[in-house]
Length: 286
Length: 279
Figure 1 (spheres, rainbow over the protein chains, first blue to last red):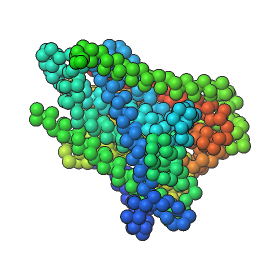
Figure 2 (cartoon, rainbow over the protein chains, first blue to last red):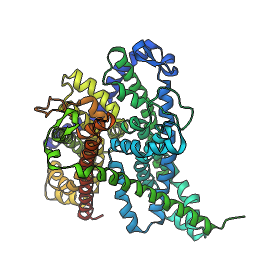
Figure 3 (cartoon, helix red, strand yellow):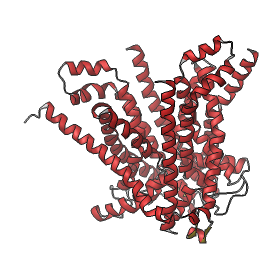
Figure 4 (cartoon, rainbow over the protein chains, first blue to last red):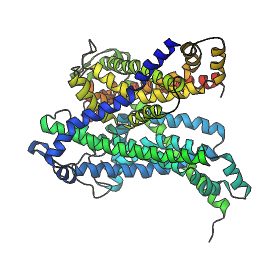
């Protein structure tokens, strides 16, 4: 018994490593990044599009705009495809086919982001350039590639949310004479709404944090985008592109870009957690 | 004109099937595209030789070794920590504030982007702890990155073990620890392995984090403190800098085959686990 208590204490210490890791990450990124934001001035850092490290100009507004644009674009594509997939797999597909398609979606999640970026740059980018004009490397290309990349995340969480809806809701609706599709839109999607919202928020977090694929297809131009066909640079690409040779203030400014990204992601994750917790709370009561 | 419910259902379901078909076609297209261009160039000498002139010629042997070292060590570090965390959460404590904090940490860590892991690994492991750009820095960074996956899958696997197993073990006079080791973990191993295999796949695929922590040296790593370029990073550099498209496709093919093999393995393990605990 005494030995068991000792083992429990050791396990507790080990179990704290995830949260300690998170704290360490936050501490080190903030320590490296926050001073330069204060030195440059938060207004200048976040609201200026002037990023010229050799002159000491550090404004990340272009990257903020770029990240926002590709994330929203990816969310639109991700939501349409994921919801369609989740609904068809849980409600309309014969069980055998659904069981065969799920590993395919998991495999989609396993493909390395560099491979997505590469296939995007050699197939999708020329297609956009010829069909729609512009350089091809664009918000549109990045949105499509990211939309496909976040599809497995959103789909799997949305499937869980749909499956968590009590069967009696669906049966009640069918018994009232609704078609399956009416049941989906009027009962299922409403009952599973918070789970689906959480799925979309987590998917957006994935999209805004993705790096290698975006570097390859987004064009990395330092300007706010005015159309879907404009090239953009995201917060993540800015870090990955310049870390290799940055030093001094420049390197610190890249860490400050990381701080910005970290804060955005933490807000998104907290929102997703809050939404899904509210759902769990409501289910307990109901 | 009002569309009848039956018609709108047909249109909606048709549209969703089309989306599913497109998704599946994209998956097949990506795999076929890479393998069709790359597989013909994956020869024995490509797998066993070192690259020459920055990867324009020669093979990818150092990158294969570097990938195995970085990803293997990452999982070797993360697996015991993750499984121990899962055991603590499921067998050694009640749900409370402490478990909420531990879960919150794991959930947040799972959402941190890989480039942030890269930045952290760079200032912490490479600079503050003096490990430099090395296999060790890269693998410790990746270990932290895959830790939440291992915790979550292990926890699910352990929870799926029927409670009756534990009761029988306690009834026979076993201590908690004996029960965990001989009964719970033994039954949960296939499920836990699924998470470990998935983490291995994620480590192999990762690029941004290893770029900033393991560096991009082309030579064979001689120790854990040597910099080593992984397959994914090598592929990125070959493709982005236009060094050799042929070798880029071939490297990507090797990467894709490794990922496919790991996915099949995890799928097989999962099925075995489900059959075993009888859900």
